[in-house]
Length: 488
Image (cartoon, rainbow, N blue to C red; front, side, top):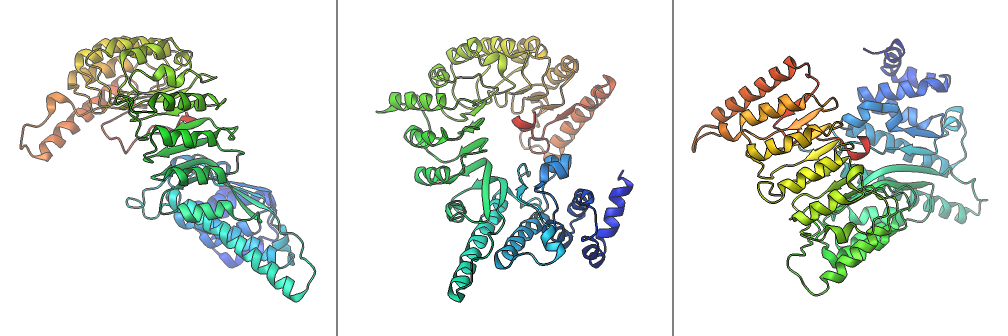
């Protein structure tokens, strides 16, 4: 239910001429609620008016939009309206000093757009993807820079005295770059210092060359970079050894994700040992690193070497499809990382054989801290799950458990539910379609759907009977995404 103040703000926003007249008189304290109401209702013109007269140095999406900002996908037109308003404000400031009261009222110096959820444009065309938001910001920076150059040229030709310096405005954002957007983002980051500056918090790059990745990393402002996510870049050990030295200057770096980097130590090649030593040394130069993702890197028997030079314990470690050996899990159990781990992903390993006992020992060592565990597509059978249950149930803080893709039967899943409802913090379990309810060959999909729906309903009844309707049990990977490490 909305507050009376929020409803009054909505009423004012519904009539733009009245809003524009009122903005010169509205107390600054009402701007946040006006912004929230305009963003929620998709009033793009009102958003442009509000940003153009923003009376505070900071406009923060995370603070203003709160839970909605974290959980809902951003409306593309609203985000674009805010960016366009910033560009318009700076263009006016470049051309002439402020004249009217409404123009001079704008005190905006920092626009914080970090944390916008990535929207799938195919499923939600009204949402803004991280990629398109990055492109929009890059183009905005280039436009303001170009306009500044044009203004300086005009003043020089007219031999007029230099205008007062335009106010500097910093945009903080998470950036996503691929081959299509590489050039515009690179140009924006390398543009001469102008009134609009782009500062990155979380940097995501996909399918870029080594040279392209290095160029962008060197162009980022070192301050404030919290996460670097380089995926599908086919870097290999030589590429990683060329890229990682560029990360040492990011003093605030907490998270490094390197999935699908085309590393395979099972097929030794000249330079493999030297590459592993280089990679380990570079990881050791990241003094605040807490999250590491090496997904799909085939690093059998090399985990001790790769993590051996880290200075602080990891809190999130993602090693899906890494072909780990028992010695790797044994090292992890005995390392200083184990009691600090909050998130662990070991999906894609075969826990039907030699890895099961090392996994039990690892879960015992992580039981006091673990919040999120993924064991998807691990060939985990009913017997394997039964063997793991005592260790799982000792993970007293567990919130998310991923078991999708394992050959578990309905009775095993029900037993898992009965045991884990005692975990007070558990909120999400992603379970597989039960192996004993698989449809026979050539059966209709509808029959399979009925079987799954019947099990889902039965699990919900069991949760309700146990007083744990707050826990979501789902067989869908996409509908219930696990929370981000930083939000955990």
